Image: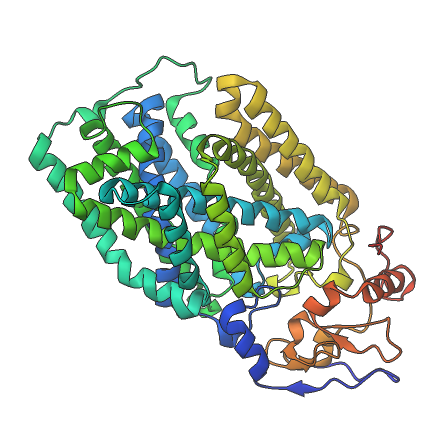
Length: 547
C-alpha cells in the first residue's frame, strides 16, 4: 500500500506509461544515468546476440596460446575449466541482480563506495573498455594495411575508428544485437574453416595437446593455477556483464544464467577460442615471438582474403561492445565528477576520437601495463560486490531495495572505499615488484584481501556507511514503484518511482530524479542534513560535496 501524502508536500504527478521524451532519449542513452524500466528490457535472443560480441575477440585466441607457452597445454586447459566455472557462477549471480535493479555498474558502485567514492568505478571500467577497443582496432587496421598495401597505417587507424562509431550510436536494442547476430555465425564458420585449412596445408599432430612450457620459469604455483589467475586478470567481463544484464527481463533470469552470461558463453569464449589459439600457435606461428599481430598475420597468410574477412568480423563485433561500454561509463564519470553532461551519442564520437589518438601512439607496451593495473582494481571491485551481495542475502534485502539514489547514500562509504583502494594498492605492488610470484599471486591476494577487509568493516559498522536513513520516500507513496512514472520537478520528465526522491531543499519536497539529484548540490546538502537530524534514523554523512 502507498503512504498518504505528507501535508505541505507537492503531490506526485504520476503516469502509468513511459514518457515519450524519455523514450526518445533512451533510444541512444539506454538509461545510462537512470533505472532501466521493464518496458525497455531486451528480448532474450536480442540481448544474447549483443553480449556475444565479446565471444569473438582475437584476444581470446592469443591469451590461451600465450598461457600455454608458459604453463603447457594440459595445465592451461585445467585452468580454463576452473575459469569457466568461476566466471559462470559469478556472472550468473551478477546478471540476476543487475536485471532486478535495472541500474548500471557505475550506479551499483554507489552501494559499495558511496556517491562520490564510486566515481572511480566508471573510470576504471570505461578506460578498460577503451583500451580493449584500441587493441582490437589496431589489429583490424594492421591487417587491412598489410593486406592492401595502400596508404599509411594512420589512415587505416582513422578508417577503423570512424566506421566503428555509427555501429554503436544506437545502443543495445537498435544496433548491437542486430549486427552481432548477423556476424556471429560467420565468426565460428571462419574458425572452423581456418582450422581445417591449417590441417590440410600443414597436417595434423597431437603434439599441441601435450606441449609443455617453452621456458623454465618458476611460477610459484602449479601451472593450472597460473592459468586460472591469468584469466582473473580479465574479470572485467563481470562489470561488463552487469552493464548488459541490467537490460534483461527478470523473467529470463534462468535463460541468461545458463546461456547468455553463464557456461555456454564462457565455454565458447574461453575454451573454444583458447583451443583454436593453441592449435594455430603450434601450427602456424613459427617466425618470431608470439603476439596478437603475429598470430593474426598467420591466419591471413594462410587464408588470404578469407582470413582478412574473419579478422574483420571478429574485431568489428568486439569493438561494438568496447565502444558501447566505454561510452556509457564515460557519460557517468564525467557527469558525476565534472558535471559535464553530454549525450551518449556524443560520447561515442569522443571515444572514437580517443581510440584513434591512442592508436597513433603505438600503445601496445604501456596499454598492457595499464590493463594489468586496471585488472587488479576490477578484481577488488568484484570481491567487494560479492561480499555486499552476501550481506544483502543474509539480511533478506531484495535487489530492488538496493540504495543508489544520491540523497540516500553517504558521499563516501569508508569501509568499501578503503577496502578497494588498499587491496588494489597491494595487488599493484605485487604485480610490479614481486616478479613471477606477483604475476601469479597478485590477483588472488587482491581478491581475498578486499573481501576480508570489506567483510570485517561491515561486521563492525553494519549499514552505517551504506545508506542514509531519511523519511519521505516516493517509492512508498505509489502502489508499484516499477510501474508508476513520477514527474521530476527539475527536468519535467517522468521516471519510474524506483529512482525518484523528494528534495528536502525545496519547501514542498518536490520530486527529483536520480540524474537531476546528482547535479543538485542544494539537494545533496539538505539530504545529508535531514539524515543527521531526521526521525528516519541517523547515518554518517559528514563528508558533503563542496562547490
